[in-house]
Length: 568
Ligand SMILES: Nc1ncnc2c1ncn2[C@@H]1O[C@H](COP(=O)(O)OP(=O)(O)OP(=O)(O)O)[C@@H](O)[C@H]1O
Image (cartoon, rainbow, N blue to C red; front, side, top):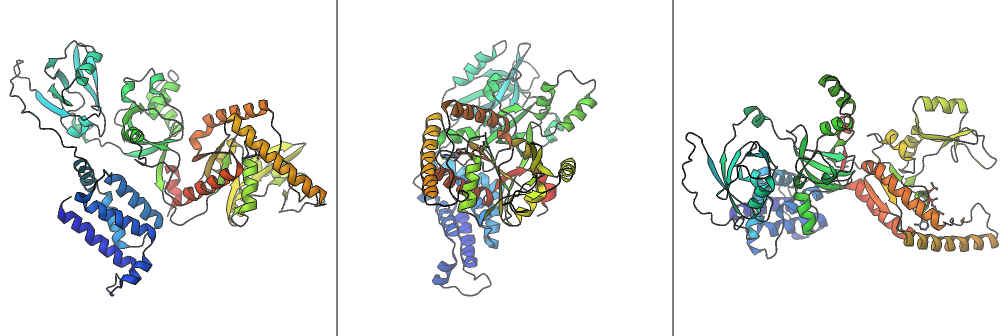
């Protein structure tokens, strides 16, 4: 890193130090009050950034871009008031600074491009045809381009965003390939050409190309950059429409995808960020997963998905456009990263197959964190029992009134049991939200009623453990609760206050729960923000508490359609 750049960082950080110590208005600071004012997170960021600024002292390889992203996230979460930190955050986000960070990382890792031999001076035999000779060095990375063969001629079909070919800036869609490493490609099969590309010496590929005529309109059309959440699973090897599965990526419902290029109506160039609301770019330090998160691949566009589902049912393209509008966000949902700066409470929703333990978890939360988590009191049309109080056990309401509420879509969910209506009203969720974090375990079909900015729900899918663990943990818990239940009974504690024994499960029931859970996960994974496996209750409680904390405080992916309501 050039000395003057590290000096700039150093100066900014010194200002940030002073601001953190409350001396930005020019007062002198003492080292003691500096220390006092420093948050741990801030100190860590400063230390790491200083180590970045002194690049020449680095022994091990560091991804500076990841580091910079983690500072930005940390500062966002801590909502730093420091102007220097805010400026630094903006600075680190600039594309050219990101470029410098990337280069610094490559250079510090000693990844220099090898010396390229001189480009040979050639005159093409085909008189009057302009050719270009392009040399590309790819170090273990795929070329990032696909080819197509048309009537014996070979063309560059697509350049993948951020791939080696794209970064070279020398090859473009539509270029006609004449030679690869001195071998003529005309009349060759695509797999023979792929072989030629693989057999390059020292990662250097030389192309002889006839440049495509540049379509100015296309060139001007900017590549998009946006994020979506997928609502379906995708395996390119099972997709017969895919022109080149090798140049694709697979994903599952609930994965966040970064769309880098959607100029092609059928295939989007996409990178996978990860699953759920907390998915983060290049988060992993595991090499394989890092590679995976870097790979750009072609996935079907929303248009292609819609068209494939209804291939013949449209007479005109206008009809199809109308259909497309009505199916918008059916396959992909636009998302953005939202920072909960105002620390607003979000409704927590536990989804899961019956028997997996959602209600037990909810009971435990109300018991252990009684001052934080609240329940939305349900409505019923049945008359109160002697020990029941209106507004405590239920809101006792007439059947006619409940029917009106259903009709006016004021219910989150409802059902009928022994000729009486039961259900949870949206206004009860609103009322409960004033007291704390509402924890709900609704039927999955009710999710769409609550998936709005007003409730900004955190949806967590509760998975069962595998068969053996399910059986063991449930038996242990049942034995425990049975013991405390009989102890309470024999010491004359009323049956109402005594713990009730947990239920027993047969092997068939356990298998059924595991199977139902897999089916339900498949169907609703797309709307889930996170997953948790309910093995033993203590671990589940600990993990879930941590997960909810993260989902409330860290930046999370939210539907862009909520943006208009946010107004923050
Ligand atoms: N982690 C766990 N370890 C041991 N037992 C558990 C655990 N989670 C739940 N249980 C027990 O499993 C049984 C079923 O749990 P629970 O009633 O909460 O399931 P549910 O998912 O709410 O299903 P349903 O909708 O059928 O009530 C209960 O007896 C509960 O005590």
